[in-house]
Length: 478
Image 1 (cartoon, rainbow, N blue to C red):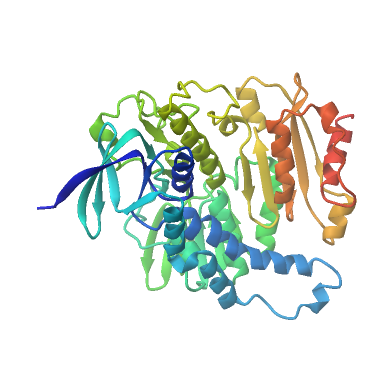
Image 2: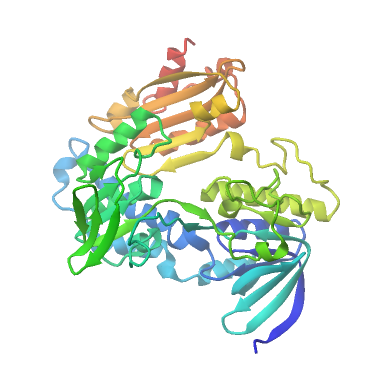
């Protein structure tokens, strides 16, 4: 019989010790509350060990090499190719060699209690934890329980796939060697980034996309990424999905309509869904907690609908599955819980206030670290129309003095979306080498609702790629 220890009590319990859980716990401790952080895997979560950090560490060396080759003078100095072993070793260091002691030490130094194990809700403000070495524990919260459980991969309904031992993004970002050939299922951010980097690291890559590559992006952005993938040798197939997948000694066989793609390894990167299925919500009586799309319904402060004690942040909340946005939500939720515990917050947050996650709706920055990069923030034209906002669009190639100095033959594209009535920026997209560093200026302009007549006075330094801002505003008639 499993031993159940008597309950410990904390002001707040946070389930999930990824960067989002760490941030919400830290914020509440700084607000004067005690917090228990519970983690079933590595403290630091998906981003630290299997997503953001290792994937970008894999990407960067090849991007730097390409940048050097794009300049006369530096390209003549290059005589070798990527050192794959060195790339993988550097990746290992950014994933802390999949050891989390450093993160656990930070949690302790921040004054946060940590318990390792799987946790689930057993009642109002009550959590049970199955610890790997010490049995089952109970924990009680005085004020709130926060779900920061992240997300899990989607598995497409393809005949034969479920029984196979294939790669997900975790395996792809932590692989110890490069396969001779790789088939990638998925045309979203992760699948596209990994298809390009594995091709640059020496694999023969076939990427199969059910619809269009990076389908949420404007067409010119998609085309620049397509061109880059093909230049790197990726066999890109859009509007293609396997009817059946099998594996034998020759590798994975992806059976298409009249054709078969064979690869040594298969990567399935077809999106993620909030990891809320096994945290005890059903046992609590979860009716009314979920939307028609199966995501938790939360208010502007992250509180779950119909409760006064349960919160969800980051991927678990299902609003925006991006680490930086989850950390933003965590900071706001932590502050809201700490203030409510002291009677300083009544639960109804005004937009753009200290306790409202308003940027989730209007100003989400995102970077796709392909080469060229794609940086976006704010609403697309479709989203703006759905919100009842009439937008004017202005776009042009990035062809300024700064870009021509940056790389010989620089190719890029930029777009702004303007609220016609308010004359403020509501969306922006930049595509090109290193355009990620252009993004925060657009984010500030959107969050600050900077009028165009005032934005005109923000003079870009010469000669930089930021000159494209001036060209876009000039094209608008300023």
